[in-house]
Image 1 (cartoon, rainbow, N blue to C red):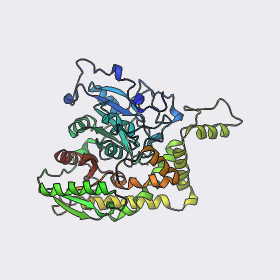
Image 2: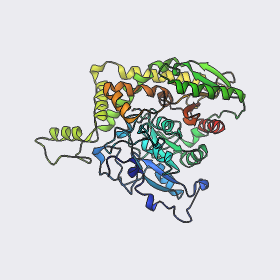
Image 3: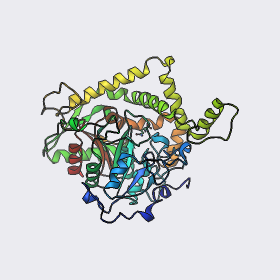
Image 4: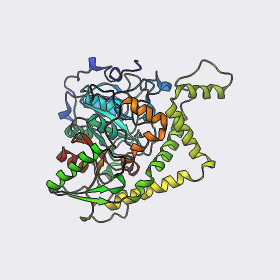
Length: 447
Ligand code: GLN
């Protein structure tokens, strides 16, 4: 496999991507004839599933993920696997064993595609596929969608099956959809949105039936979380963002500033929880049962240590170290504190929306004086060039973690969030847990 060409990664099966004749369709008839790309941390059987890692370079899964099976049952054709930051860790798609994926939106400039689903976003921007699947743990569908000028939807946690998805941080991992328009996202979501008994975190049919939906309206209240209006936002984003808010008001919607105090503590909480889960998940890659392995070593310990050292890239090794530190007794109570911040955030979000969350047994009554949706920019600014990005990362890797501020709130609360391209920038809309249809419907109105 080429190490530097993202398009070779997404176009391996273009030649045989013609949809089968007379497909047996159930719900997605309007998707007939469309093609899709799949982030390479989602299992497929016809080609390798690498997670962007050397350790799985030649691993082929014996089964396909539920999401892939559902799309194939609709008769849709996968055109190829899309590059990603190794195991989904990153915001740039520069952390892949197979090389960097650049942003197809910029012809004369080598800009980052965003990450970690950069291959999925860039493939759609380049028209190599009608839509693609990505995964979003802390923003990995929304950030690349914003950078590549496409729609990126992260459903509520549990609405789409994770079975067959290589886990990064399983309490946050969510399969997302990228496309050039909302209608395609809606149709794909219509196919994927169902209970999967194979995924213990999949929302049951009974609970799905109890989800409260925002009543359609021509005058919604959009909340702007004050903690997301930060000095890091670029002047371009502020300009474009302001004109989106003005337009919403002209259309009869209300804009209100709201406060979610926990957001200020979310980046450390996210990186505590995500790295702890990642360190635990990645312990399975020892090169003994499968994965990259040396021919021999003086002892089993040296074999495993050597395999992991050679097969994981620097970002993954950093996260294993951070995560194992958090999980060790010497780290104090970081993990518990991060869990508490997350809990607090879930309550703050629940309070802010008019409709109640199905997650709370003592559901509050439907309100009218709170918010229907929250709205914010998706990213601090336009995508940097690959060179600028790598330089910033080399100066201090924390520089590249900061942009996640905009996207991790929805991830930690498990709520639905979509990034849509408006006025040349990515605008993020978030809604109450489970109310995915309303988030997509309002996004459609705005586009
Ligand atoms: N940039 C974040 C991280 O590296 C988010 C990644 C993701 O959503 N997979 O953890």
